[in-house]
Image (cartoon, rainbow, N blue to C red; front, side):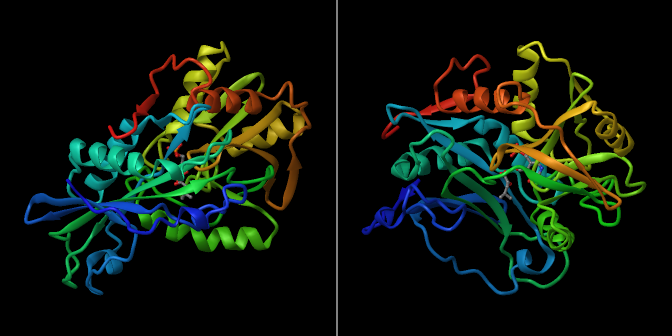
Length: 353
Ligand code: PLP
Ligand code: COI
């Protein structure tokens, strides 16, 4: 792999005490090209604009998939990636569904490890802070016909990250718009999934909600996920989450929470969850907690769920008793190498490895 380092690091420009998600990018980026059926030209170079044709397929037909993952530091400034193999597998599930090429493991992992090693000073040190890493694959063929591209570019960039939401969220159960449909691409991290959610999310924001709680597209009676989060409900002393299907992105944070909860002896259920059950639970006081989880947000409580213009507040539970707080701490402790890695989730990146 060719490595071209920047002559002028921008690291002094960043205020690690005031990080705004996605506003500043680390010094370098990784690039690899897929041309005529072969991966070539893998390299790390200074972060900057790329030159591709205005008629590249990515701009017109949305052939683009991405991932989101994080690197953390421990107290000794050792660096750890969290479950990177899961992101490697998922980007390929996404790329196959979007008729894009399979990204070989050596390209994904070597590019990732080398890039984060070179830009390790960009990883914030405080608890809960991290370097958010964005691998993505785009179609670069400059031909306007509506068919899969021949050429692609796989890239990785990264941005220092702090707590994503600084408050509990007000959530609206969506009954008109849909994020995904059976047989579609909801289970992938296709860029278009995000574009199509912006309009209904803006409408919900204007009504005073932070995020939408998506429901199934045919009946709007089954809970799916929320914004860029999978969702959990502490309902009748069980931790319930919608079972991943082809409408739902199977989250790595969600999977990790399920493992941690099971290990703690909490009863967990992955199953179909109806809107009715949630509303009944809220009315009867049987739904004690609700939260979203994802790489960017980690775990974030919901404080209100709205359905058909009725706003239901979640009961107030002391911080000591909150399942969400306990699980978030367990997860972050593992991510920051503060507790034993019982599940083998951390990948340490030694300096100059
Ligand atoms: N659902 C959607 C739509 C997302 O964008 C994300 C974020 O990546 C998640 C769920 C959570 O997935 P993960 O925990 O792997 O980040
Ligand atoms: C993630 O949590 O990795 C996401 O994809 C969120 C991002 C769209 C901001």
